[in-house]
Length: 430
Image 1 (cartoon, rainbow, N blue to C red):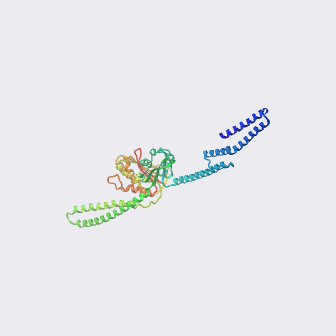
Image 2: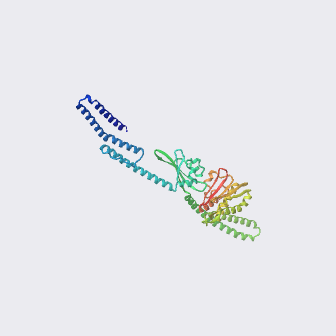
Image 3: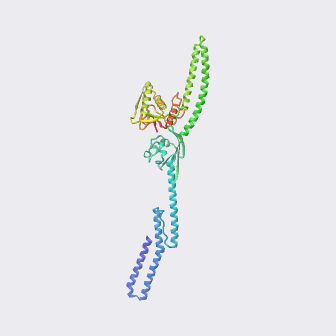
């Protein structure tokens, strides 16, 4: 625009010069006047050509700069009919076409990656430069057990969720296997990607629960079958021999003590066989026969069944059932055994003089809360591991049985000591 202004200023000056020359014509000869007027006319014609050759192409190029500034890659410049300028116009139009294609390619690529991340079976959590959550895919929200508005824009350390707190303990570019208190196992990677020269941190979370459970089940089934086979065969032979000898000695005088000792040994063999059978029963859990069951009634039945045991330990057992809870589909005998085991574990955890509360929530949730000493952080990740127990004489199969039954029912569950000091076993039906 500046060159255009100067051009028109020059035209005005020439026009003014023509006017002044005409005013002074009375003092000039006619020949001189014609020469001066002719010169001015030639200069104006030259300026017209100059405008077409220089100023107009520059204005076209200026329009192209405006298109670039506004990132309007779909518009094109028209040729001006001047060779040098048209070369610039053609180069500019090719550049705009290439930029448009690149933008379309990037948009398609970014859209494809967004769709891939959203549909990924792995959880993806992308953070900002200051470690705030900026983006999560649906699987990450499901693994965290939260809604987007509850976690977006927050630091992971400020999110009161088991998986979030475990993620904060992973170092940059480290991969770690995490086992939570709900028996879920995750393989978590904390890394970053480079975008526009900056590092964007992110977490990649892969659920390994099914694979780990299958591997554990395959291992302990093999071990239990082998032990049960050897122990039962051995105890069967021993008890048969002891019974035969005992019957032979019963008719002899003075052999009462030896016969009693043999009876104690046989009882110990039977006890060992029952002990091994309990392990074998975990392997033989049947598939649940699901039927509609009133959840509140099932909870009340289990509470009445366990009242005697709780009373012996001076433990208060009560229920808080939501009347809005209706029926759920489950295998009642299997699930009653699950609740009995959970209440029994709570009683053993409390010891004496405590309280256990059975609660139900809509649409289908059971919670068993106790005020026992709680579960340490070190024990949480091992709770549902086969043969792990915090009890001196524990076998480590109770929680494995619970895990297997709840998993076959498709239930989500968790066992943790909350900030209020209560230990809660929560079961959510699908």
